[in-house]
Image 1 (cartoon, rainbow over the protein chains, first blue to last red):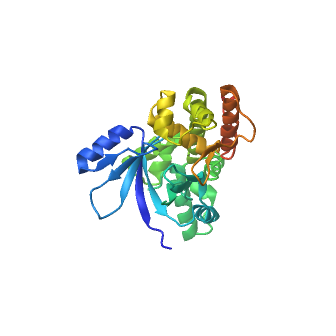
Image 2 (image 1 turned 120 degrees about the horizontal axis):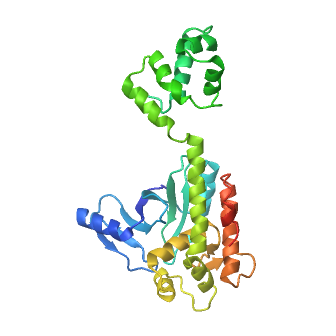
Image 3 (image 1 turned 30 degrees about the vertical axis):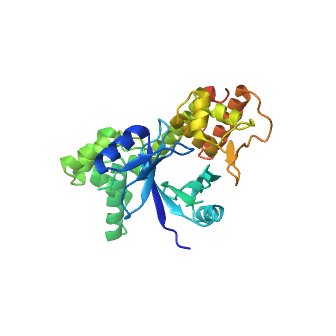
Length: 117
Length: 196
């Protein structure tokens, strides 16, 4: 299976302000009507990928994570750890059935492994 | 340009040794007008470049005033190892403080053990008088600290390993997890944050 980047996620200390900014700048549609209250970004284009906004705790910097598609999150975590990644959030099933895990790559950059429902 | 003057000295030393393998540390010290022992310690990262000597050594190496000023400014920053340690200490101290001050963690932990629980951040926020963002930040922290896990069916399951009936017990457990995690980064939390 190929491992495409399926989504970008903006981690923001002020998600509402971030949503307003990008909606105003790019006409992105942002919808949080789902069980996690997750702000899903619809860029309005078939090109590129869609995204989301997740809140950050006050001490964290703002950053962007890439969500990479995998068929088996646990197996992908094991392989990533063998290659030097550090597990941050273990494989987790979200309310709508997605599975994801968050890791730091060997350079300390955060990324997510994601399996759609 | 090297980020630090010590690294620039090392670069100069390496280049001169490459050109002439008999070039000695004493010769390098003489060129800089430096004390041999001090220079040796600087190159072995045993001590910082003496602030009073940096400008003089830079001039001897032929560095311009702008580059010298950048190195002087860089000497006021903590070294990378110290900066990393301070960053980790700040992070784990903030994690501990959040556990102690933000009740959302306990509320999620408590509610997900009740029969009416719904894995829905909006529902939890409504039940606890909190915001969805505050719930999601706390949820992320609980997952990071392995205080909560999810089942394949999407249920949220506390991972205490023993019954946790009160907020005080929860805080003690959560702080213990923070300590364990911090220790993996060689960080010891301030004494005041070690118990709830």
